Image (cartoon, rainbow, N blue to C red):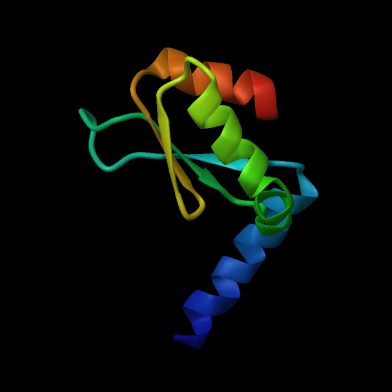
Length: 84
């Protein structure tokens, strides 16, 4: 358990140092396009705005915790263009 926690902290630090806020997340090859928000501070500061943007734009996405699920790759790309 300690080793997994240490490796997760190391991965989080590496992503943060490189300025990476989003990581591709896939359930399967044929599943919906998804993103994992890897920067907790970014998510905490922008959760409400992200939710509002998802509901008010034409982009089809569902925000569940720190995971975004999109209807299509195009929707995912539009989100990345807006929030990256």
